[in-house]
Length: 325
Image (cartoon, rainbow, N blue to C red):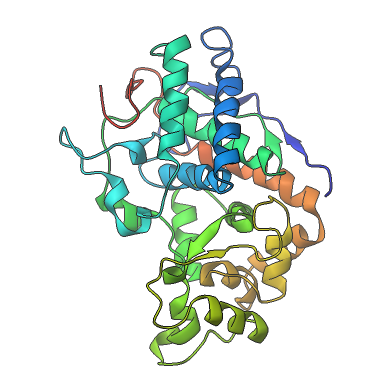
């Protein structure tokens, strides 16, 4: 595996949109909770030993948080106290890792009560998870605060779906200030983790609403493998590796898969199979160089983590990530 780059961003402007003079900083907790990363890492390492999917779960959790209402930990809020939880939207039903976030928060509250936000825990947990799986490291800008609201109605409006076209997904990235390089780099997080058969059966048996038809971009051998794993009458709960080659390792194989027409999700394969798209050249670039992918991924995670954070006196520091104070 090629050595991975370290993306440095000690100070970064905090808001993609909106005016705030505050800044996120990788040293934000330097004097108030200097052990935040080491505490989080210890808990994630333990969780990863018990469940190899933990790293992918935590990375996905940060993504699903940031695209809805900004990186404010709104996805962590349970129903109650006027909150309609984002967790209950269909696209979020398979999101997991909440228990690990709870454990990190409890440990930090014991040593630094009322200091570290749940939103920052999500950002730190994603970086640690990627690194533990063999991926790049980057300096995580911190200083986010937690929302007092959730936006369940905004989940489907804001979160990209694997059933959407590349144009629709691109529009959702553009809406939060992310470009084509961010789109391809962040999609590369599908180099580890699993997806349920329910997410891919339309590609296998009912593509474009034609009974029995399969997505023509699928490699025929891979198609037959997927059909054996996910028969047409499946209940949809069987899990399939997002990357059939190194399913638990963070590497560039995801892009090699796309170039071989072995992208599991339709939205992934469209990055390479959409004629004329600027994403094709980016897939090629990352497929040819793991260091290029790693450097871009770290920067794109910083860019995503910079979507509309609450800072200063906005929001709060939750004592319990699942409910407002």
